[in-house]
Image (cartoon, rainbow, N blue to C red; front, side, top):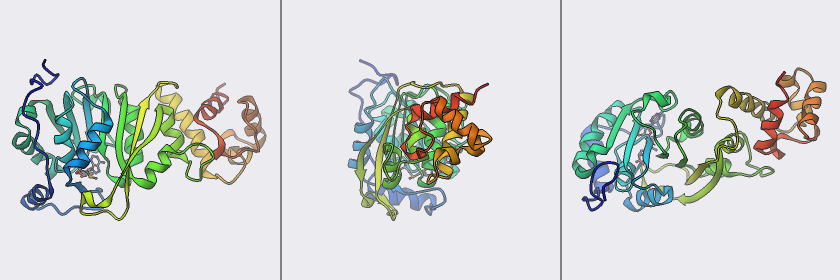
Amino acid sequence: MHGANGSALSAQPPRLLGPAQIRGLAAELGVRPTKTLGQNFVHDANTVRRIVATAGVDESDRVLEVGPGLGSLTLALLGAAGSVEAVEIDPVLAARLPETIAEYAPAQQDSFDVITADALRISASDLSGEPTALVANLPYNVAVPVLLHLMSEVDSLRTALVMVQAEVADRLAAEPGSRVYGIPSVKARYFGRVSRAGAVGRNVFWPEPKVESGLVRIDRTDDYPRDAQERRRVFEVIDAAFAQRRKTLRAALAGWAGSPVEAERRLRAAGIDPSARGERLGIADYVALAQTALP
Ligand code: SAM
């Protein structure tokens, strides 16, 4: 049987990068990892294998990877997926990747593509194919915006499995009423089911980050409209409700609705108690609420 990349399943699997290879590549490129770009490179083969297994990608998947860095996760992905398209903002790292892939995954090199770009600014038309799965060790300072942006922009994505800061993973997967339930928790649910998918320690990275990491998974369900305008309307009311999360919704949404009276009318129309707080509402409530704003 042949995969989407045209290679036999028995093709030589990619070799993975360990600490020595990561240091070697970084030294050759003169890379000094920057915090601004969230550059913490994974140098542990078991971790990248685990991420790929948890993502559950197979030969039928076209993977979108954000921030491939030196290629640790990319190589593991190429051993399982049909193809990988990577988006890397750092031109030095992006330029070296094809060579690394050719060296460590010669049988899969034709299934790999990289574009030098900011993942926050790309749209589906910038990609050469239609990716089915997002798998990434995301740069921590822009992890949530990147995840939401790509789930919004790239309709073909069915699943996302991303590594983020543990605290952000908890936040994304939190349920209404939880202390850490917030804007990312609600918005992520617009796209589908969200779940924690494991913890990752600091020592698998170079350099070691100050915080623990966690894996989060989104399985797209298409419960809510894909239309960008509709989504913006829903996200607007979520932002308003959480901007003043200690206030009742009647007060917190006064600005969004135009007045506390109109906020109350809309809340009642959506079947929501006006004295409740935003942290108690699920995504379905926010979608219903946004609809009450329509003429
Ligand atoms: N995937 C690699 C690994 O696991 O070793 C590197 C992960 S590192 C946490 C994040 C990567 O994202 C870095 O390579 C960084 O240059 C890149 N990056 C940072 N901001 C980005 C952005 N806005 N768009 C695309 N890539 C970005």
